[in-house]
Length: 308
Image (cartoon, rainbow, N blue to C red; front, top):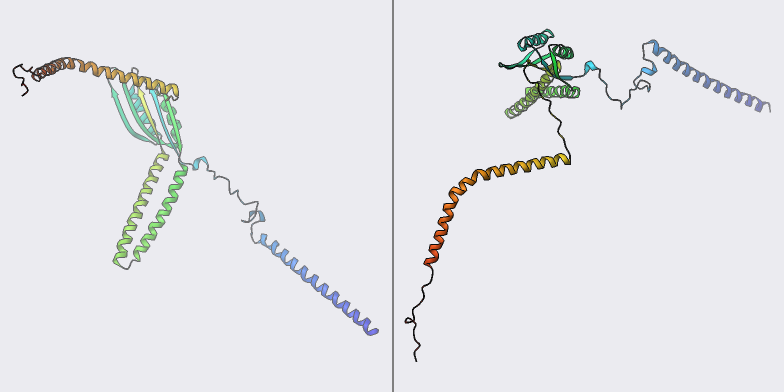
């Protein structure tokens, strides 16, 4: 009995020791993990919200990319018509306004007579000063017409940049392959391919330069009218619809009839002068032919008697 009692006590003590050892190891792991987490911020690790996998810092994948106004590529184009007292003086002042803003004159066309004077000047000015230059030009005299338009070419510019980068990589790859060519056939083939890639790259770069030129320098067409010159008439909007089509068809029919009657009136004297003699000649020829083919009646003696 005493042996069984001591055996039970030893078994219970062993179980308690095992449980205590397990709790101690678990507490050690927790403390180790907490120490690592506490040490991470001290070493300069980003907080949980700034980690790439954190949900709070993840951007909206479906949100469109937004650009600031300064980052967008916009082409400004404008035209303005101003009536002035002296066209030559106003043209010189318009040129001075353009050059003073950092631009230049892209075209200059003038015409003058005793009755009127007119000048059309094409100005290229920096895009940031486009509005200010147009306002200064309007003060040269009495503004008759103003037309300003803008075109956003940001997407086209970004697409060109991406295509140029890709094409440059292709050109570099072709040059490396050309340097490694070992046979004459490979050399000829790679030279042709490299020439084609370089031509495509040059074309893309030329398009990019033209686009940069349009976005950097805006175009303003200034029309200066003298006191006696006529102002340009604005084009009317094109009308559509059933009544418009009916009106157009009726006008076309009337125009066609007028042309037809004009042609008939022009040809009628010739028909009278040439047609009557021709008709008379044909009638006379027909009468003569009828007389020639008319049968002659037979005489009674010429009739043969029947034999008995």
